[in-house]
Image 1 (cartoon, one colour):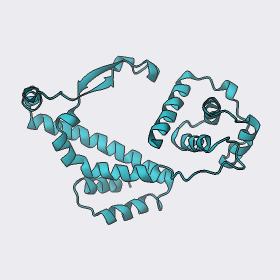
Image 2 (spheres, rainbow, N blue to C red):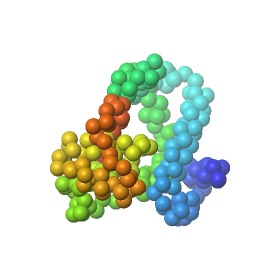
Image 3 (cartoon, rainbow, N blue to C red):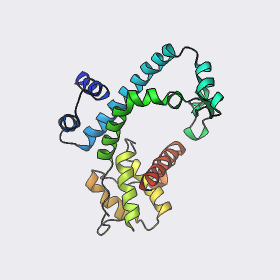
Image 4 (tube, rainbow, N blue to C red):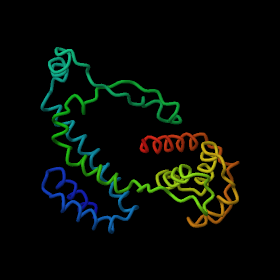
Length: 230
């Protein structure tokens, strides 16, 4: 199955598969666009792109063995800013994400943007297609008969429930605390009772949701939600 999926990605990357075939194959691989299957396919695609980018980077190093000369001719001599990006220092990765230290490195994707675009444009388009399928459609949710005081808090809950991948029931305690802080108006008993539809049978305990790492992780996911709403 994994080879079939990667062969599919190869076909997209090389332009061998038409748009209608891409849609039909995606539908089959994801059991008629089932959300969990879509997310799994998306994760496989990210692995494939990461592997392909490393291969392509090695090819660029052979094609342009003197990067300093290339950068001088294409950027410095033309008074253009050399593209860079910030990445975390390896020695800080063992710390909580908020404590990582960063340093600047060359952004090879932007330096060789023409080559990169030519190589990965079709895969990027397919990635966007999956992202649009995964993103929950957001008709104005109805808050009647829910514990949520407003549509915004219900939308945020649904986004975090799907996209924050904490595999513990305490996930909902952290979400409760964040939503209560951001929107107010939540009643714990009503919220706990409402969670039964998701198989959460025990009363949640927000007072025990104290992990700083999880709080930061959830906050980042919430900020991601706010950005995609703009």
